[in-house]
Length: 210
Image (cartoon, rainbow, N blue to C red; front, side, top):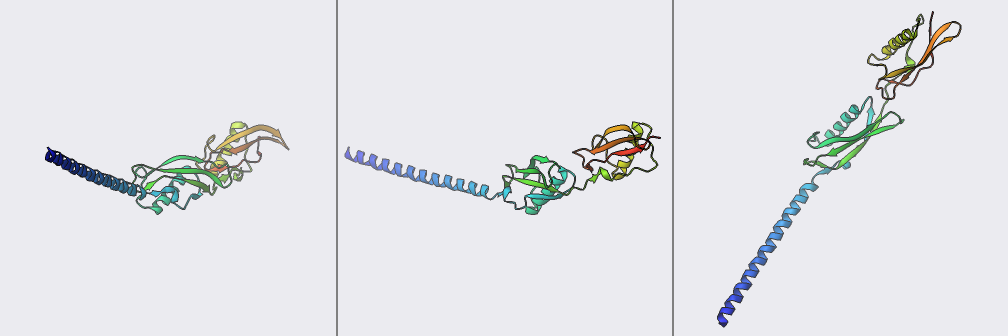
């Protein structure tokens, strides 16, 4: 009986030792696997580490800003691709401020093996739009009515840029008949805030009626 008890005790201790060793081995393997995964994630570059965060010398649109951002990302890592590694997220573009006119956010995609996080670029542009004050009305022009006045001024605006369109790039305002050493039709032209071709407003434009 004592021998049987002794054999069972020995078997129990042996089994316990084996299970303990397996458990320890399993934990080490699991820990090793977890560390490897963490190392893979850590190899990704944080977009916010890109040193260039200002997009400069933009001219006409948000598309210019995106093209500049793509060039910076490519210069940082030539393997980066839109739709595979990153996408453009929220953005804002306006010419209402004299220097920084908005921002552009680039966000990494989870499936990317190269980058993580996001970066926000500040937009700085060179305003190359033409002032509507530069339009020139021929001296011999005559406008018998408002439509004729608009037609003459429109042709002058098209001389500045052939792509400009009414209500998209400019609007007319305060067209009226005045009497200053003769009868004239007078009015103003205003560039729209969102025009990519024109800016500013004109002084009073007077065209002879007769």
